[in-house]
Length: 272
Ligand SMILES: [Zn+2]
Ligand SMILES: [Zn+2]
Image (cartoon, rainbow, N blue to C red; front, side):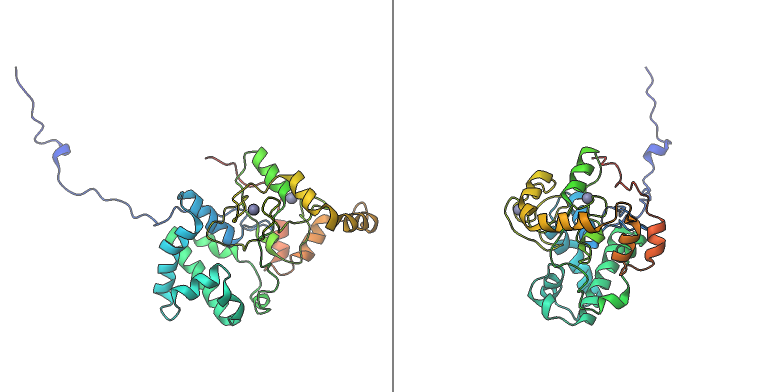
């Protein structure tokens, strides 16, 4: 019986195949770009970490900070860590330094993910940042009804930037639902970016934050008076979108963002 040896077959070619270059991190698409529901930068970093099944702290320490250090060797790693996680340095820092670190963070993330649209996660007017970041909350805030709604509809759970703007006290999607800053389980507050950040979950006790009833119980007393006053003074047909545009006045190109925001905005389907 004759045996065929495929000596001429391309199978035996020893040339190295060309492997296309890839980004170091998964090029995760940010949510709501170009709309008022654009994702927050901190929330994006937490989702990116989740994609790689590591904690936000691990991602920041192993990938983001080394690259930021490479770009700004004059700033120490500890200094960057304290800024990102809002530890003591953040509060005593100058605005120029905060802007420098925020800009370097975006540059580093762009380089790691090869996504050029990440600048859109910081659509705040540059002038506003000079007010000591005072338009942004120090703690993460959320709407438990939105979290529940997205979960039930199998949507990606994410943190919109507007939840962090401190002029916005109620969810623009759910009338009279205050944005919550205190976990209904452990009663702690936590910064927008921390070592265990994960959208939809408490960074301290790691429990789900979308339980509307629990959150309502926690806030019933403090908000009941405001709720009824609001009902009395708010006209029945007040234009919600105009109110939102006014509340988002710190966003760059707020009119364009509002025009691009569908009234029934939902995050993308969760494919995991
Ligand atoms: Zn909501
Ligand atoms: Zn908690």
